[in-house]
Image (cartoon, rainbow, N blue to C red; front, side, top):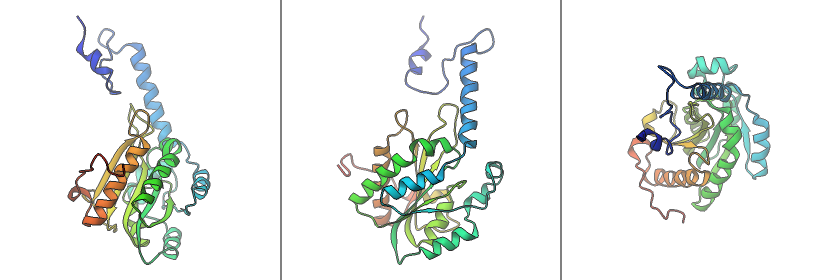
Length: 247
């Protein structure tokens, strides 16, 4: 008799239908689990080559700003989430010098909880985002590159740059089936103190297993357009994107 779980396993990377050996897992399933755990740890602790991404952003014809949080190292980043939600003094001054009368959107990129995700997908996703934003069109500020940031840091960056919309591309918390996933968070009227209820999230960006760059960028463009039109984001902004948006 066939186990129905075997069929379901073909449609997911979740750990189902692992089998068993006596009262435990088979050796192969146990080794796969240990490998996934090691990959998740590596994703968090791997250094992020921010200089290389900065040069690549310049090559796209976009101004990069390399900023910093008060976080000293990755251990402190994990232990003190509050420090990842704010810029250091020098970075705040840098943004004030780049403040403009008004911009539609400011983009931030951070390794977050997965440096591997940004190294693998960050530049390609940025290309796709810039391409769809140019078709709306939106007035974009500089691209801010910030190691060891949390999602809420985008509120402070958007506020300091006088942006109507703040978007952060960040390495997501690695799981035991995906260590290289990017997330994108969008907030209208970014201000320090905004809550997660005021953000929209596009998750699991990691082709080919997850969302493609183009699909994620198109979804972000739609949400950005609607947020600016309706002057809301988060739970007040629903995803009703028509199938032919930007098509």
